[in-house]
Image (cartoon, rainbow over all chains, first blue to last red; front, side, top):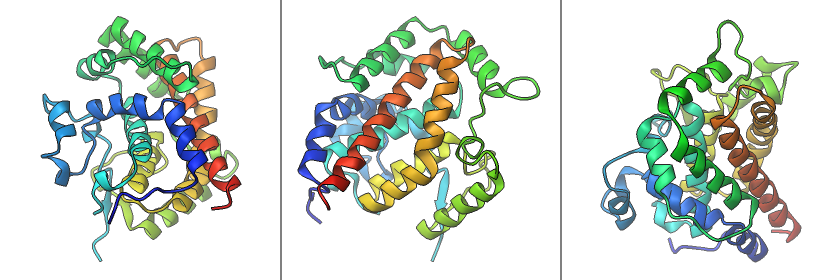
Amino acid sequence: MDKERRGAPSRRNFLLAVGAGSVAAAAAVISGGSPPSQESSPKDKTAGQGYRLTDHVRNYYRTAQI
Amino acid sequence: MTSATQIPDEDQARAHCYAVIGRLMYGAADARLLCYIAEQPATDNAARLTVAWKALQSVCREADVDQVRLEYDDLFVGVGKAPVTLYTSAYAAPQAPDRHLLALRNTLDGFGLARRVEAGETEDHIAAVCDVMRWLIENARGLESERQFFHDFVAPAMEHLGGAVVDSPQARFYRAVADYMLAFCEVERTGFELEGMDGR
């Protein structure tokens, strides 16, 4: 699936303008918060040191097996 | 599971904000978390969220991990009744917290989520509902699902909880955390309103 634009352009512009992107770009380094399938992504490599912010909290929920 | 890189940057950013807030509220910040937050590059932006982030970075730089632990325990754990509860049912539905928790569990069931057996906290812990928002975003469950969950189970509680921390004379490090959380909550509210205004 392509990286599709979700929602209204004004919403996207707002989120980018208020620093959600820049702030959370920083947060991304802290969190290393991508799913296991993303282990090899550049973002995770940048995170480095293997510090997983969300190890405590992410996967708090298990996905029910269907 | 949908790859995180398939969602737009601004939504990945939102997911990470929820991850940061969730982690900050789940337990006292440890030294590594303090260092990581402190070391992030600062952006030059006057938005409330950015200002709050920079202030959080500042307290992280100055923080003593033992003091942070004491403050966390004093605020959220306490002896007897914690001054500020992290369980959102208490804020979202103070007259009927059990009903709120049941509604939350039903909603989670609809998403195919259930609390892990080893998780000690109930599903309405602020960190847990933040993690649901992260999950909804990263798994592209749709803005409508996110908006509904945000309004039903996140926003009112986040605002009351954040306000309680800000008002607490015991809060110093966690006041900065609360300011960041409140700033992000406002961003989310506005974001969803903008979505609604454009009639999508």
